Length: 412
Image 1: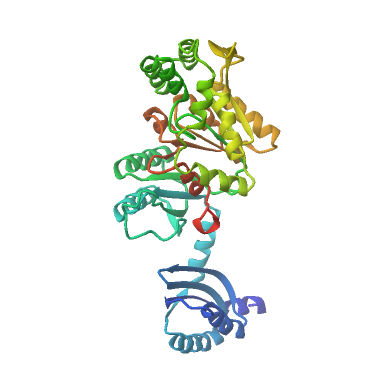
Image 2: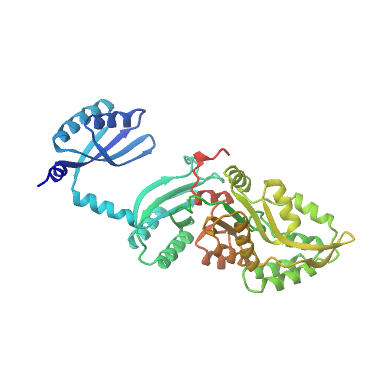
């Protein structure tokens, strides 16, 4: 037996687990002892819940030193008031753990006004049924107020999971069913470099950035509100062709004075969370676009208020200060939205995997499907059924958690 084999056989793997009240310098005290014996750290992880520490260290040391290390650590743990446990790890167990590193890693995000044990139990059961193993759990939102009835409360946790789903479509369907039944939102994403480097986000406008359909607001001022609203709802549900419905609705606006458009723009009901979302996206360098089947007049108004970089929507024809009932140029429908997303990504030199699309209607489905991350926001049933991610329980700033932002990162 050569010297290298002998030296390797004299190595011992030890898993050290420390629990107790967290305090500054605890990790430094432990690793200082390990450093005395030239210990190799193979893995280390720490979690802190309500000032209670859980620290794990997997280390490799010479067998002749292991007794000294454990003795010194026990004394140090006693002086620090924490509990310490030691677990021997075989080389076979370690090699099996190393082989797990090659498996796919996913991020599953749970988001709601509050999170309950029932929601987490149902989610983790689905993961288990599809042979997915949870590596880590992280809270993204700040500490939750005891008054759970606070209307703007947000609760979000992120699971890091490994493995290959037994049937990804079936797992997605189970998560969607759980989401509907237990009033919680989720996102299931492959954890790769693109997820961490999103750069372009494209929003629908009506019923996404604003809590209304502008064409319905215009129609009410023109005295044809009920008729237009009925056509709009059928189009958003995907029951009739969008372009056909658009031409039909715009024709009903003929004769409306353009001063009405300014009044509507100044009183648009902005969706909950938009101001916070836009502030953070701009702060972190995202390019932002509005891709809307609505009208450029209102998209430009939002762009000015929130620093949005691109606006593509439909242009209403105006003659002598009144709407003619016609539009100018091509209609921005679902197909055009997807084309525009690709075009802007190309202009900005952004990989399509780094793009995000957010919308609520059937005409948003093409761009949700093209984007690296497509999010249905308070969407129509047909859209929720098709989209892989959806937000139904809270404001639009919920998008930030699907991007991995923690409340502690955000200055607003």
